Amino acid sequence: MFTHANALEIATTAHSGQTDKSGGTYISYLESIANQLKANGEPEQVVILALLQDIMGEATGYTPAKLSELGVPAEMIDIISITTHQKDQTFIDDYSCKRMAEGIPAEDATYEAREKEYLRYIDKVKTNPIAKKVKTETLKILLKDDLITKNDRREKKNKFRIRKYENALKSLES
Image (tube, rainbow, N blue to C red; front, side, top):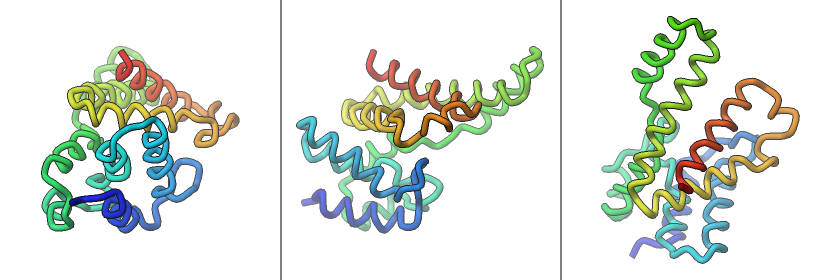
């Protein structure tokens, strides 16, 4: 049986040396999401997914095959695939070029394109109830002041990121 301890060990190894937006360890960030979901009364499968949600991202190099070798059940790997955001750079580039051609400044067009692309990803997340629970809690934690300080919230890129997260959360909660 695949347990919380198994997931924590895999996630800790995979995210070793990575930091979150506030400079803390990435595994602590993932654990905070998992702990909140557990406190909310969510079943162990949801808590486990919170720990593994980003494991197939670019920064880790973990694949579905590697996770399978490590004992992660196939149905969990399928859900991890949904929660792992793989940017669609082609969409971002096409969208931002179109917006720039309409007279939108390049930086604004790029941020807008990233938000639109992220919301397309959120639509995919909404198709799975477990992925939806995990991503909803993740976004709530990302929007907390301790991850993006008050001063940092004034920076343009963070204003766009916050708006992107707020819109994604609204989409998930609707």
